[in-house]
Length: 252
Image (cartoon, rainbow, N blue to C red; front, side, top):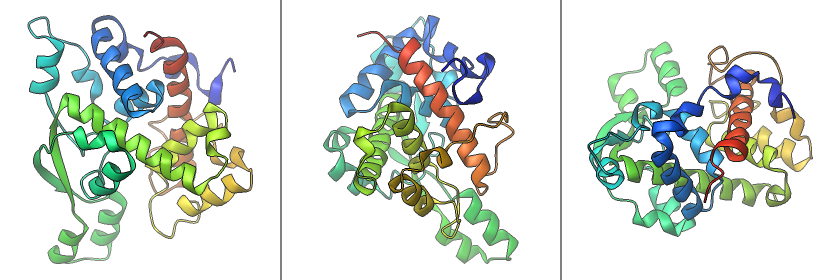
């Protein structure tokens, strides 16, 4: 596709600099980590830049080796978009054995899902009720943080494969989109276009209903409760992940 997912060149190449030039050494580590966990390198690369300020960490300083830099630099699971990594850790380790090698890290500030927190504040919830929404988080060395992202993507893709029997036979474009949507479905347990809709449409073969080919940017599509925004952002991330896979992370 010359314009995959209705993403123009400026949007498609927006994250290239985080994996090229001075960032090439880190890009190789991302590629190796993806393969260690059995996920597509492009999918992991796009997850990192979509969920964090990864570009700030991607360039190896001149005065440090890669191993030193990966150990010294610290990142929180919240910044990685891994809000449920701590609470799901046992299940992740069971489903993805390689995840057991990721360090324990140290506790970081807990967070609540943005949509749940906003709903609670709107209804005037007490501090005690809000505390119940908080999810535990970790601070991890950058190397473990990248590994945690790979493990989380693998965990979500395995869940997709279990609930959508055709998953492993689908083209990469659809597998990438489904994995992104399983990581970040429209918020709200009762959202009519949430995870149950994704599973139902997939098992009915209506995959095109899970993409959004409008011309909105990721910045314009920013409401996690609105399906059109969630599907548009996922579509953009899928296009970028495919580009990363095919054009950037192509080395050994």
